[in-house]
Structure formats: C-alpha cells, structure tokens
Image 1 (cartoon, one colour):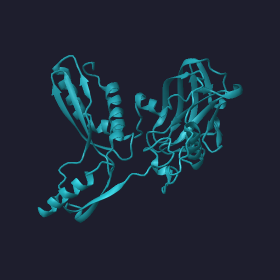
Image 2: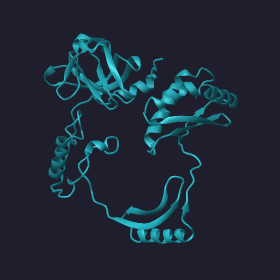
Image 3: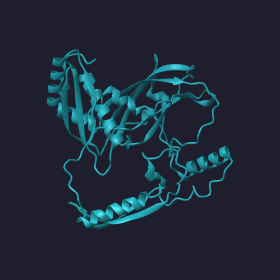
Image 4: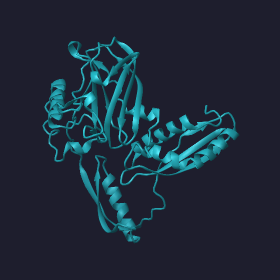
Length: 335
C-alpha cells in the first residue's frame, strides 16, 4: 500500500522563499527538498504558476554539481532520480519572468514511495533589497568552499582575524541538522568530576564526568556531591519509561464533541501512526493518550526517538499527524 502524505505535509517539501526570476530572462526557478523519507522521482507531470501551465518539456531539473536533467527524461525505467532525505532539486522553468508579488505555485510529479504528489504553495517574487547576506551553498553548505567563504565574509565584515575558529577535527557534514552556516569551533574549558560509581541496568562501574563550563565552583560542587554519593554506595539507575512527548489540544463546541473525537483518535491510531512516522526514520509513535476537559481534547503523542532527545523530530511528526487528523476527521467541527 502506497502511503500518500497529506497536503499540509506536502507543503513542507517546498523551500520557502526559493521562487525567483533567473538573470537575463532565462526563466523562473524554485526548489524542493525531500523532508519525508528516501524515495525516487519517477516522473514529472507539470508545474503551474497561477493560470500558466508549464509542461515537463519546458522544465529542467538542476540536481546540483552541474548535473541537469530535462523534465521529460525522468521515468520509472532506469531514468528515475534518487531522492535521499535532505536532497534539494531545483526546477528551472522556461517561462517569462514573474512580476513582484505573491504567486500560486503547483508542482505535480510521481515517486515510487508516495505515488503521485501535488505540492501547492504560495510564494513571492521579492525585490532585491541590497542587504548583506551570509554566504551559503544550496548544493552543499558544509563543503570546505562554503565554509571558507563564510570565514572570509566574517573577517571582512568584522575587520577581525579568526585564528582559532578555523581549527576543527571533525567532518563538517556531521553537523547537518545541528548547526547552520558553520564557520568553525570555539574552545570551552572542560573540567573533570568523579569518579562516580554507577549501578545501572547497562552502565556498571566508576565513571569520570567531563563538564564544559566557565562557571566557577560548578565542577568542584559536583565533585563533592559525587563523593557523598559514592560513600552511600553509588547511584542506582532505573528507567521506568522512555518517550518524548508533544501534547496538542483540539477545541470543540461542547464536551460531547471532544469525547467522540477522543474515541475516534484511539480507533484510528494505526492510520495516524504512518502519518507521524513519515517525517523521520527514527521517531516511532508508541501510543496517544487522550485527556478530556470540558470541550477540550488534549492528545499526548508518545514517541521513541532512539539515542536522540528528538525535540525537533517529534515536533515535525506531531505536526504531520495533526495535519492528517484535521483533514480526515468527519465528526463535530474542530474550532
């Protein structure tokens, strides 16, 4: 069975603010980014700008790295385009330039994982304001060239030389999803506390605790506390539950509407689950608690998030689930 994302979730594929006119009247362009799950682009139907339809024959796909594909060349038989999570594709349209202002945009294409998709958004052609902007690369913003461009920009802008900022010992690509516009690292003092005796279900033994801080007496205070804990036999750790939660509220006209909605959510859990999990390869929806208070139905989504805290991933997953709920619940009106 092919899972089809909701229209609200599909809007997240579009790179907001990417609509722009190309120089010298060479057309119009915008980009999409795969924020759902690994898939393959197996066909391109058309793009609509307002009332103007741009067929695949007038569309070129910029895949980055100077790789361009005619829209008509995309097909399921060996001509598909791989779409790993995070990949950006720029649609270049052979069409007259758009005037400044808001424009309706619709893109229709096919994928193996989600079937036929239609992305409908509004975006604006903005005037050039001349503001200074931090350099970035849409193709690979963690490449050495992009990082060096930002370093040079920062030094020119501040009239300072960053001697230590540029010295780092890891692959900047590991920072995707954690730090944007990366330019380098700053050293933070690290002190040691402990050893601390831990009697956990997995961790057993004595552990040193590194603490990065510039707050005086902090490490010393922790160290004294650990000595007291060790004299008491150490720390015994027990995990009684593992979930990251989000709790949106749905408002109805009366308590009956909220009650019926809560029952429907419970009955629809197996349908809601793939909607939530479509935004992440890690977040898994365990269950949904429903709490009723008068005309309010509070849904507490409980996710497992692996080794990550998962604050952002569960926010996206809950948004996707709520979008589907709003579009598919046919009971009392949600206010």
